Image (cartoon, rainbow, N blue to C red):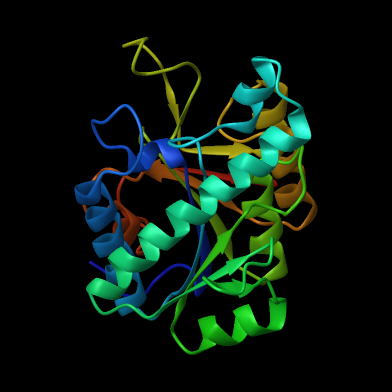
Length: 241
């Protein structure tokens, strides 16, 4: 097995729901530790890693809006949930010796750094994991879009989406046993087929910046490391499949 990573600098997007484990709400410490250990393995390969974590395990802005809450206000609440998840992941990473910095798009100086692009790049060059919290800092944008935006700003070689399944399928494999998994896809195919892995804005940002999207199962032990070495099961979305 080759030990040379495929990418030098990557951004990993993890949904808030992925941190729940078997719980119905909040953070599962065992799941946090497992993901942190996988990130540590990738850092050990010499890969520079950034993270964006969703907040759906605590609060989803769009769900709040559906119940009659002002959408912008609900989205700000969702951004704060991502900060809580970022701090939890920072704690899990630092407990196993991985230097980590949290940068928030909404300044909150007492608990984390403000988002400063050049400082974030410098952290990554020094081998630190940078967790980008509070989305883009603007309502009406998802954390998927924030992940694509930050990956482009950081000059990442790929945007990785850690999901509940091992790639992109033509239908939900958890409901349809005959669902077909794609090995490769183009951005346009992903949009035209309405494959709900990332929202259209995020895919458009990736497409405009020729940023490959790699979708894999974040819950498979060691999967992040395997993907970095070009092994395992995943789907790659690029300009041409």
